[in-house]
Amino acid sequence: MSASIDSMLLLLAFAGFIAGFIDAIAGGGGMITVPALMLAGLPPVEALGTNKLQSLFGSSSATISYARKGHVNIKEQLPKALMSGLGAVFGALLATYIPGDILYGLLPILLVAIAIYFVIKPNIGDISRSERMKPFIFGVTIVPLIGFYDGLFGPGTGSFFMICFVSLAGFSLLKATAHTKLLNFASNLGSFLAFAAVGAINWKVGLVMGVAQIFGATAGAHLAMHVGSKLIKPLLIVTCIALTIRLLMEPTNPLRMWIGL
Image (cartoon, rainbow, N blue to C red; front, side, top):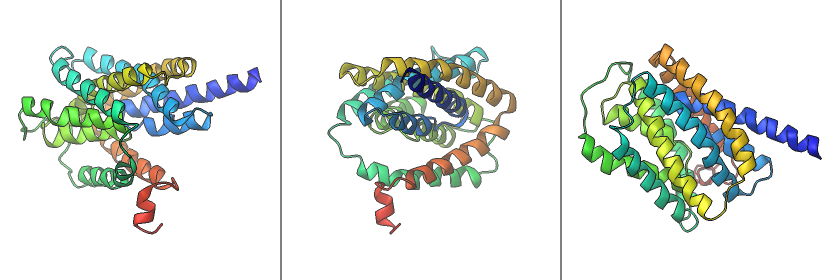
């Protein structure tokens, strides 16, 4: 029995490492860890709460890596991080009351749209462009809205932050990736606090996966900084497509019924 538990923890740690690596570059790590936690036997709510605990390690490690290289000024971005965290708290608290069917069904469509956007925008790279939304407006509208979504549902949060930073804030892909990890850390923290308040955390599993997340996220962030948009753009597109396929594989996804799958 002990051997099987150890094997399960080892597999979950490996899932955490891979998720941290991918998430630090293109987002989408939760679509690896949440199913892994549920396959390990954790109830859905506990799987979501434990996922937020282990995600904290990965998103914080990636944020620190980007900040050390000057790609994000944490102190300057604290107001946006606070808004992301607050949005996530409200989203997580409302998660048990608001049906997620509509979000669950629309998510594959949104992810495909994001992938198409980056495919047809060949000029997106390591150069920042002019902003289409003032930083203050961006911080009090877009940021808490995505944070709220992360607390309420979660999958694709990093991709949504990325496309908003690129298309509305005018960030380069690398700069958008760095800022995404900071705001994603804040939304993870807000969601985690809400789930912890109702006792929906498996601490042992979450901490084991969290340690693995540190190594994966650090490696992913360093690779992204060295390669830049040549890595981030294709991996972001592949991740969005992979998440879409993964969601459509779920028999309970409403979109399957809507399109007759």
